[in-house]
Image 1 (cartoon, rainbow, N blue to C red):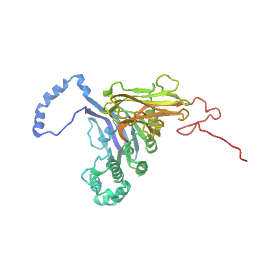
Image 2: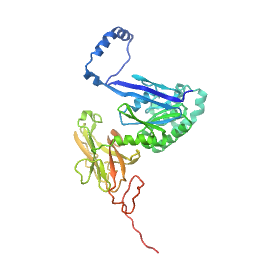
Image 3: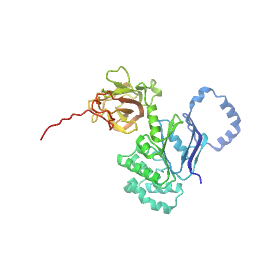
Image 4: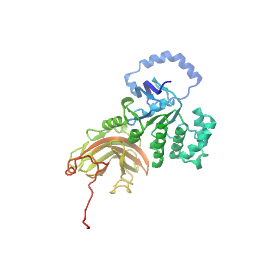
Length: 429
């Protein structure tokens, strides 16, 4: 019996930008058969410019995953991670190559995937179990455990269309993890839910791994990749850039997202991250005493993180925020320009903004961050939690020790932060 759970060879997925494929009538299907030779001739004569309307979400991907292996997949937004899991889940077919999956698959790709909105939570549990080929008696044995894990006892007979996103993901994860698939595919399960549920999910994934089942996990949470996975794959622009031990792959990824110039700029609004309300223009790292952006920071100097964005909707009420992560992806802190969070009053927070370019800055005092690599996630949103842009790992910078705190100690300082704090010793004898 083969020990291979997943085998991918020369996998590729091509999307036509803006194309929507609808259902065809019988007449259209018959017409397509007779016009196929002419259509192929016309397609061959298309100009090179038209090829720009197509994008390879995945290209030339090849790898194998053994049974019982836990593999993490990382990469930036648009790298092809979710597309890969959709192919493995048989939601979408590949354009070229093939993906061989050996075993019963359970997947959690996005909130609500695989649920029928008109059915209750109870009905959806049995529906998903039936799709996996499970007997009703087996489902009956698992039912109470699933409901208890999801913490939805009061709502299990409510149609899931009335569930919040948190309720959706709790039930979806409980179903995917407890119905005992041989292969479990999970896409960013930690993106939704409170801290307690996220901890419960991590614990359950660890249990699944110890039971010898195969787990494929997509996550921007680098500590979970390092702690849970035996191997990691890095996707970049639809291609497999690196695979190996999670520590090595994560470090390589964080090194590649580091901006040597201390800034990332999108000169054209139409091509910048965002939507019809707001788009990013630039994210910069600035340092006291240095003209222009800098990616290498003196530990004793103030660091300024600058986020520039275009407001495209007159009168919009926008906030800006950042997540600062260390070199393994742990969030050091999050902060925003909101009144309850900011140390100073931001004159534009809570005030309708006219159309145009805005620049928000956040100041981190010197002698606060420890030595190491840090990455900035830039966020612009509306209201209390209506995120419009979340540019993960937008830019990175290194903090270097200048020697001021090395007069008495030359070893490595532990901890994510390394502040200089007030101490005093008194003789009380």
